[in-house]
Length: 112
Length: 114
Image 1 (cartoon, rainbow over the protein chains, first blue to last red):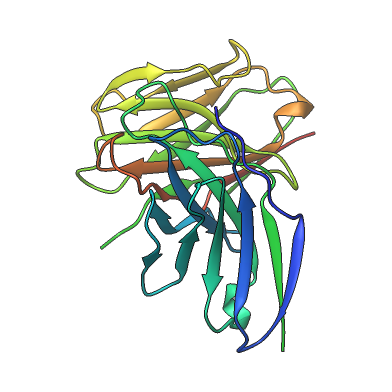
Image 2 (cartoon, each protein chain N blue to C red):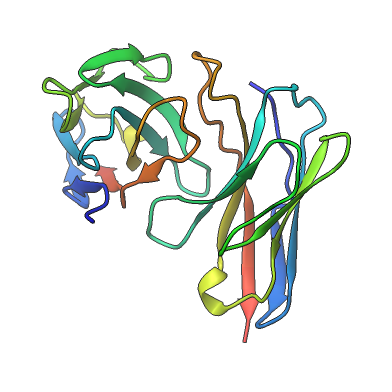
């Protein structure tokens, strides 16, 4: 399974943008980049995913490097509710034997 | 609509006891996954069901772990002769199918083995 590397922790101030990086230098051409987050005492929740182009949804934006070896999850205005562990996962839904591989993720703290 | 639910939310077992953890997936979801999450770690894949068929159990750590989904909806993860190292949060997730990118997770069951 392809590996991802994320910083262990990051801090942000409330209402400021947050850029969460992820390195995935061994990504294959058919791997999608997924982001999930896990709020305290909850299961992970889907945030966003993309393949090559940048993606936006109501929760966040995903910026993917041209060589696809790295990506950045962007929270445009952090709120206290965004404090969570953020996981960057590579997944090819057409690779039947592949499963989600969660690393330790990035623990985001949001300061009021 | 209702999300994925799991019960019990908390379970304390004495070492050597058997436990059963239940997962109610979102109605109509074909795929069901079980994960184990140790303290401070990300979730780790245990097993996968497509309807009632268990198609992947490569992540089950030992033969003391057994999962079933007999009617293709509710699933049960059973751990026999629990050990202290089994203490973890057990997460269930469901999706429309394995080829779909989004998995919906339940809140998990926190198992503590004394």
